Structures are given as structure tokens and as C-alpha cells.
Length: 90
Image (cartoon, rainbow, N blue to C red; front, side):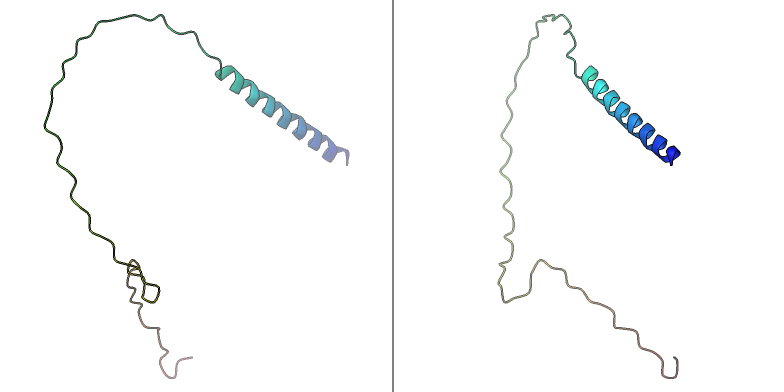
């Protein structure tokens, strides 16, 4: 009885320490580091113009869904026939 209680207490302590360690690691990684000194550089850019892209081609309209008709989006499934037993085989 005492050994089960000891195991339960040790596992509780180990779980608590694991939570404290995770919180500590999260807090240490969340610190904002000092930024490196900024340096300025001068860059020259040139822009070129190109012809605009052609408009996209129109898409095909989807078939209309009617409540009384089968769903036009569902695939047609052709199931194989059920196997039949040979007469005399049981």
C-alpha cells in the first residue's frame, strides 16, 4: 500500500517539475533579443513595363441541381453482381 502511494507521489512531483520546466523554457525562448545595429545602403532600381496578362478564359458552368433528379456530381458506380453459391455446395 505504501509503495503505491510513494509511486503516485513521485509521479505527481515529476509531472509538476515537467510543467515548470516547460514554462521556464517557453519564457526563456520568448525574450526579445537585442537588434543588430542597422546599416544603410544605397540601392538603385529600374522598372520595366510589360504587356498586361491576358484575361482568364471563362469556365464551364456546373449543371443545375434539381431535387427530383440524381446528383450530377456523384460518380456512377457499377457494382459487380453478388456471388451465388453453386448448387450442392454448402
